[in-house]
Each structure stands twice: as structure tokens, then as C-alpha cells.
Image (cartoon, rainbow, N blue to C red; front, top):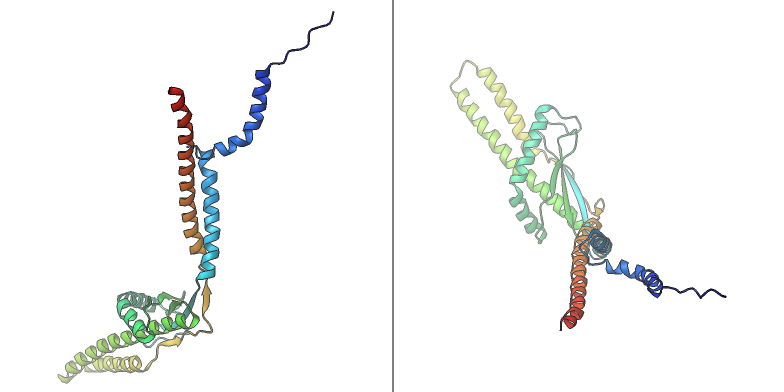
Length: 262
């Protein structure tokens, strides 16, 4: 007597095959789900692709250059080759504050002399010195150098007017005091002579240590800006894709349900 043939459970075999066939689909099905598995991969890929495309496009379509002009920012008797003292350091920090006050005047002068509106050059102090660096930006090397030089020269002109006015007022005060022949006349005369020397220096010194040139202009990278903007756009696009996929999936699921209810 032979044993009856083994009976296979179709439900088990069907379930096993269904699990195998559903595994690849489950990865796609996870997209749009309100879980980290469904959201993060899409956002990460969209952000990276957007950043790459943004950096490439920005580098291809935009270019920028920077050039720097150097100006003495210390008192008129200062030697630019020497290290700064505490007094000179305080003085140059004050000059940086004046440069910020002069921004509108410098901007107007740049537009007048170059024929194009542009932001004034960024001013900074070279470490360990009282030398001011005016770094201008432009679409071309010559444009960047022009912005730097006009900014530096305009500052020097405004500095010269301000300093000579202050020195002349002090000299006039001392001159009036000396006219009355005071007891401390020798000291006042010495102070007046020193101020006259400073006034002559303020009127004659160029203050411009090294002008900017197109030859020394450097190309600045705009890829970083493009990458940041592209990454942001990519992330927003990824969110849009997730919302569309999720909406279509919900619509697809809602169709059969309404048919069953009927």
C-alpha cells in the first residue's frame, strides 16, 4: 500500500512567492510614506543633485573677480613698514568706523567714475599693522580693480579733508593763545609747530601704498553659492515629488474602496 502523495498548501506557496515578488516593490512603495525610510532618501538625493547642478551652472554662467588696494590707516607721522603701537591700532580701528560712515559717498563716487553702480570695496586691517586693505569685486579684473582703487582714493580724500580741518582748527586756537604772550608760550609754540608738520604731511602724503591692478586680480569662486542655492531648490523639488507620489497613491487606494462600498 502506497502512501498518498503529499499535499502542498497553495496558500503557503502563494504567500512565499508573493513575499519574494513584493520585496523590490516595497522599496518603491516606501517612497512618500511619512517615515524616515520614505522621506529622507528622496530629500537627500534631490538635495545632492540640486547642489551639483547649481554649482556647475553657476560656474558656467557667472564669474567674479576681486582686487585689493592697500592704504595707510595710521596717523600722518606713521611709518607703514613698522609694527603698530596701541595708539596707532586704536586710530586705524577708528578709521574703519569712518569708512563705514563714508559708504554712501564712496558708492556715489564709484558710479560717477566708472559709470556703473557697485558696492564699495570691503575694508579690513592687515593683521599686525595699521594698513587698510580695500578689496573690490567686479565681473572683470579691471572692474574689480577700479572698485578697489576708487574706494581707497575716495576714503583718502575724505580722510584728508577731515584731518586737515581738525588740524587747522587746533592751529588757529594755539595761534590765538600765543598772541596773548602766555607764560607757557614755549610749550604752545612747540605744539603749534608739531601740528603744522602734521598738517603739511596730511596735505602731501598720498596714503595709497599699493593700488589694485587688473593683473593682480583674482577670480573668486561662485560654485559654493550655486551649490547652496541648488541644494535648496533640489530639496524643495524633492518635497514636491513626495507630495505628488503620496497624493496619487492615496487616490489609487481610494478608488477600489469606493467600489467595494457600492
